[in-house]
Image (cartoon, rainbow over all chains, first blue to last red; front, top):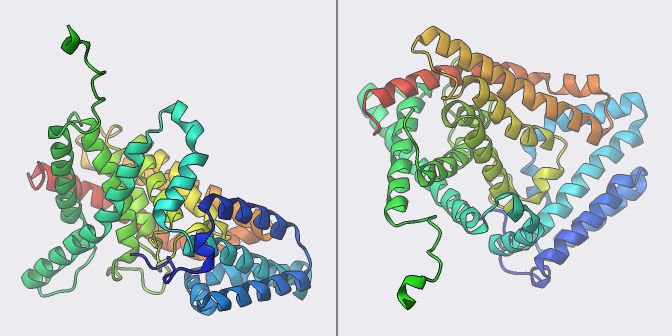
Length: 209
Length: 191
């Protein structure tokens, strides 16, 4: 579940998350404006060297983008067709560069730090009712729910196999959903029982009386 | 509809956010007709958000999911995540999921399904999912692709056409599953 975070820490990990985000925003804006295939390829090579120095395999990061390749190929071909080969190379290099730069921040920033940095950014949203305590709670819950959901799926799939002799298929999804929703509702009830989300009483004046 | 307490709704939103992630990580499901068509169950999760949670909660679940991905959890199909995901040429589809779930829920969600006629419920779910889970998502994804890659609008639409058959299968799947799901809940599998 921590596949994107890079361990052991590198020197980039020491930089504050906010600074990294600002740098990323500036660099990305610059990269969008560069048109020359040569500059973009050179920048891409620099990013590659940087990754290499940090000790990560760039190729492995880019392989994660496998599901995108039909679109990437389509972009390359249209650019080539509409303009020329260099335009095709430029657009691919630009995407690769932007993705690698952004991944650099994700790789070197623990989730908690990222959350704190983004919380500062989202602070104005307090006024339209964004509750950060609740948001952090929800994030923790999602992180915990994912392995739980996969486990539950495994259990259902085994039961299905035992009873039908066949592999799990889409028919399983409906009872699975009903079951996990029941688990969620139990959790909701226990939160109710523990008074989660109820605003604390104002330091009670009753006591002083 | 039952009255749902605030905490219940909160946990349900988290559950469905996690479900979108889990659907991306599940070993391939056997879906008939899907042979050779690129298909991830992830957008099925988005459709189910709208259909089962409703417009507002469904959209919030998708938003929460994307936020967790942004924070660095590798929850997108193929184990992708982090800030880089939002720099890809197909990020528009991810953003489109938010209004997509909303519109799906608006037309086909639990609040809209007052009838007990299964045909009407099914048609409503199909219409909602088609309008929200497919059309709305493409309405964000294609312009984003065209804008970020410098392709013409038409070329961008053509480049994404291979995903349409898979999405249409998922529309029927999501609508059918919602009916089954309602049956399962009525049969007392869930309190």
